[in-house]
Image (cartoon, rainbow, N blue to C red; front, top):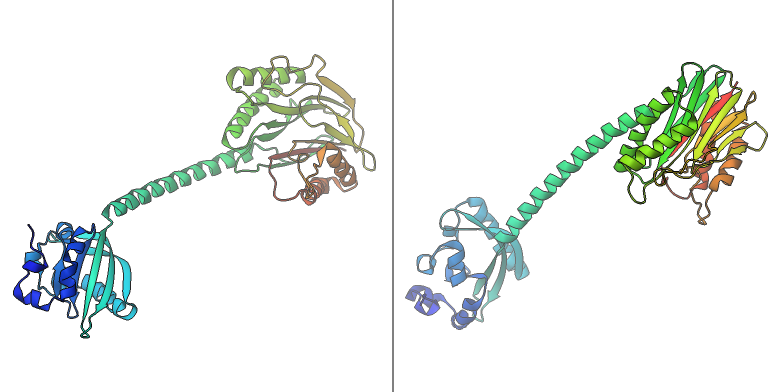
Length: 395
């Protein structure tokens, strides 16, 4: 049997209040370490758990001044500050490092309470809860969080690079023969699934295309980039627009297609003299041709969405239309039409059509921003979808 208060040295026992001696059985049943010291910081009692926590036996330290427990001056200063706080407030609870016999430091929560005796004396009861397991868990959690933060930084750097690459593929405004082209591209996230394509073919035709891949973010952007690279090849080889749609549809179904995935696009080809335009759309919002002061004409898709059905492209997929001087062509993705106002009403194609009609009265260089501003004024809140916009003016 380990010595308790009843087996203290006569000197220590003589200084121990009778009430404290009577508490011994209770203090020994606690799962926390317990230290009792008098008003001069002399240790009067430690329980078995305290011995196990520190490696000190009570036969060694009973009668010690508490200062003798500490290896470091700053630790003792902290303990003294806690003691003073307990005197002022009656009790205190703090995290602390408890010195051990082998020179270690055990993380604990220390609760210190000052007790007053009828004769005016005072003693302190200190309970110490071992939180080493909690600290190990916290350290593992901090390491895991640090790893996740590094992983997130790496992902963000990769996304920034991917965004620069994707932005570099976006068409730039330029003048080609009798055609003036203006463009806009904005992903809702860092990278997106929309893209626009504007490129001459052998100085005979100008190819235009806008595409919208379902979903947002990395997966959509990867698929969009794959479709883009195939589009470059097909249009560069002057493939008929209907064949472009069929080839892209087959590519995605055979190599990428998954349930619920699809894409839409609208493609146009204008001859050098800007007199004839071919158009082919698949599940895409209609392109518009507008003369300043007139209602825009709509060129609707003849085929359904791509990436799901092998026969999605209609046999008569291509439309032909004549162009006139000052005609303006507007091709876009549904990030401009599928927006809602504060009442929950969608802008739709009809709403965008009115914006195109109004902004066609502006100089061509101001029309793009005019459309974007009007859509932003209609929309309640920030954009929720990618946006691609291609404008062409016949001069």
